[in-house]
Length: 458
Ligand code: GLY
Ligand code: MN
Ligand code: MN
Image (tube, rainbow, N blue to C red; front, side, top):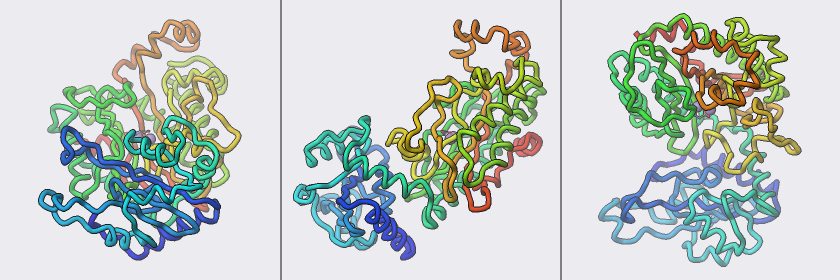
C-alpha cells in the first residue's frame, strides 16, 4: 500500500472517473472489501481488493470505499489504530493515501452513511462487505444476484469502460504477461530435476514473488490435465507424463495474465501426444490468425471446434465431416470449454457481473454442450484483451457417461481412442490484445511449437 503511483497513472485514474461521469448521472460507491482474518484479527488471508474499486482507485486499500460523482473521488477510510504501528509499522494516514490516488476529499468510514442517498454500487465478493453495502444502501446487494435499477446502469457503464484497456492498464498487463512468460520458462527448466508437481509450481511462483507479484488465480501444475482446474500438486512426475501448466501473474495493482503450456516430463512427446498436441496447436494458431476488430468471438470458438474436429478425424478418433461433427457437439467430448474469455483486472474479467461483460446485449448463453461454456460472445474491438486456449482432454466423467457413449457411439472410434491413453489433457493458452490492425500476442515470447518446447525441457 506504500507504493507511489506515477503522475501519469494518477491522470489515468482521473480520466477513468471522468469517463464514468460521462456515462451516469448518479453517484457510485465502490467498496474495496474487508480483510479476512484466519484465526485472529491481525493474521489475515492474503488481501485482494475488489477489481471495480482498483480500476478507479488504483491501489488495494483494505476496508475502504470510494464515492464517485461528476468525476470527483471521495475516499472513506478509517485511520489505522494507534497500536497497529507496533505490529505493522507506520501506516500512511488517510490524507496521505487520498493524495496518492488523487482523491478530492477523504473522510472516516462512519461518515459514509450520510453520503449514500441515490448511490449505485456493485456487490463485493466477501460477505462482511456486501452485508455492510446492503445495510447502508437499505437494499440487498448480493454478489449472486444480478444488479438491478441504478446498480445495473452502473455495472453497464463500468463494463463499457473496462471492456477495452487504456494505456495505464496495458502497461500493467504487459508486465504481468512478461513475468508470466519468465515463470513458465523457469517451470520448464525445473522439470528435469523435479520429482513432484509442487516443485515445478514452486519454481514458477518464485518468479512472481521475486517480482513482488502474486498469482492471478490458483496455479494449475498437473499431470492430470483432464481435471480442468486441478489444484493438487502432490503427484510424482513420471516419464511418459504430460505436465499441464496454467499459471499467471497478477501485478501489485491487480492486473492479470493467464497462460497455459503443456510439456512432456521426459522432454520427448510420444507420437500420440505429439499428434494431439499439434491438433490443439493448429486450433490455437488458426484462432489467433483470425483475431481482429469486428470478428465475432463466438466464430473464433467455432473455428477452434472445427479445427479440432478435423484433426481428430485425421487421427481416426472421430468419424464424419468436421462441420457435421461440430453441429452435433462431437468436438466438445474432448474440448468441453470455451475458446477463452476477457482478461484484465480479473482472470475471467468482470465475471462477478455474470454475463453482462462477456455477452453483447441481447445475447444469452447457449444450452448446447459445445457452446454453453463460451464466456465471451461479442464482436472484438481494439483494446480488448482475450485469451485463446484450445485444449484436448479425456475427462472420464464425459467419456464414460452412458448417455454420451450411446449418443456418440458411431461418431467416436472408441477403440482407436484407447491408443491415445497417454494424452489425458493438453491446453495451449495465450493472451491476445485486439489492435486496430489485427492482434498482438502479449505472451508470444513463450514458445509453443512442439520441438521448441521439447528443447526447453532438456
Ligand atoms: N486459468 C483459468 C483459465 O484459463 O480460464
Ligand atoms: Mn484462461
Ligand atoms: Mn488459464
